[in-house]
Length: 220
Image 1: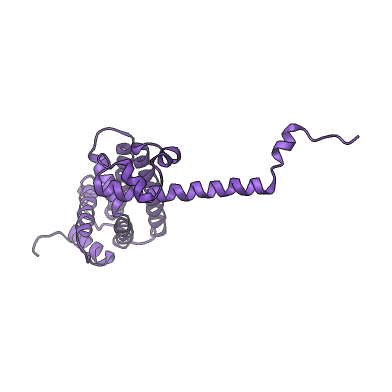
Image 2 (image 1 turned 45 degrees about the vertical axis):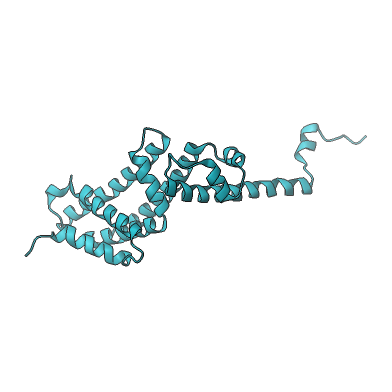
């Protein structure tokens, strides 16, 4: 007598067609999720993270509002997801660049890191706008994420200034204020570039910022 496979075994043996349908659904969900995140980033950055309507995000993404709630959640959860993904990209980029340039002198390392940072925000202006608004907004999950992004940036600038002091390129008394000043200068350049239709090359902008920071603005 041939022993029949157990119910658990029969459940595990899905027909090939069923497996194909499951994979197709997963691929569609992944694609739809990506489209929603792209549309959400665009609408939220343009209209504001607290003013944008889910209906407009759904219309831009070409999906039903219910699809957004099913795949991601409400507006706050959508903002959090966008900021989280961009934060991870930025953190990975800064870590790679900092480690790859560790053997360089301070000025060369700072130039490389800041040029990468400026280029990233040029390519992701919507994320930059969202992070700025979330940072200044009421206490919520996406405000914490925006603050985490800024904390990561401050950490990198602190390490760069520390390296400059170690190399003798910067004065020791700049250890506390130096990172904030350098980061603030680059932040204003990013804001200026967002409004400019034809900004200068990233490496040229950074070279000017570093010259001003290291050598000062006073007449010699």
